Length: 368
Image (cartoon, rainbow, N blue to C red; front, side, top):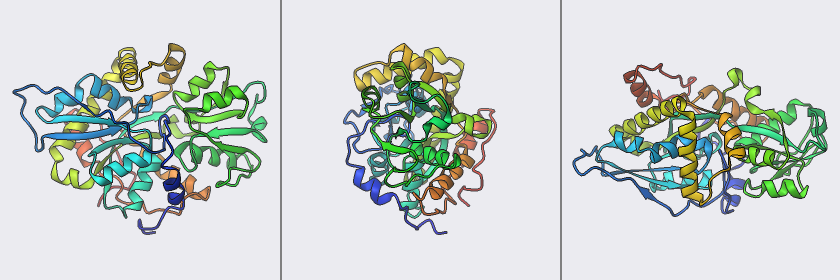
């Protein structure tokens, strides 16, 4: 299949891209926040091939590599005299738009918008250059209404958005139970209620939904309201790992500034290493960054369980991205795409080798 083939959900995503969503993990909606931050650079630091690099990410725990790397100055240290300028986004489509327009150069983003952005541009504009996080997605339910998997049938379950990563995963899981749901309307043996993660906790408290298949920290926010975890999506995947956050770059920026891309990747690798070696300090750093972005830190009863469910890693888990695309095709939300060339892991593997770490695989989907 040609990468030029359109995704059947693109028109839908374009229509709802104007909604002001503030979603977690793989949140998708519309606008970036106007809070560009520029790191302090030492006066005698040597610049790389450009004065600055502009990165984008979401103020979400599954984007903690970016949150912590910026907060702790790890990226800036690797970039020397090249300034890192960061912007946060509320939605995948708006971040893809920013990449395509040249407003940002590198972004942390979920698999569904990465696939959409790659195929919409016929595979010419964007490349996934690293992984960042795995996990952090759960099916949480009202224990007064749902106590087992079979009880989910006939209930109202929220997902963040039509065609987003969690929506696709839930529809695939529903099909595996032998239940039928119309993917577009969400109607069927289970009612799929597409709900902004920002309001999902209120929807749960009001009783308008019986549960939700959502990323962190929304899942833990619901648990704090009395919900119970019925299923951790990680349990459905080999080795309990699946991609939830990638690092993606504009192809022209990679071509013109490979030294800067490598510096950002070094920063990402070193940040993930620091996060995994110092989980409590890293959690506090991420929460501090979230407080600066939103004005409110996450309480311990939310951030503690949420943090434990996320794995920070450099491997993009390419085979799981391919599987997620297959799930979308089976659900009728995606026309089978050609993902050949979506990855360019050569810069990452160069960094990993220099750091004495194992190289990672692109599952046959890398540039030739």
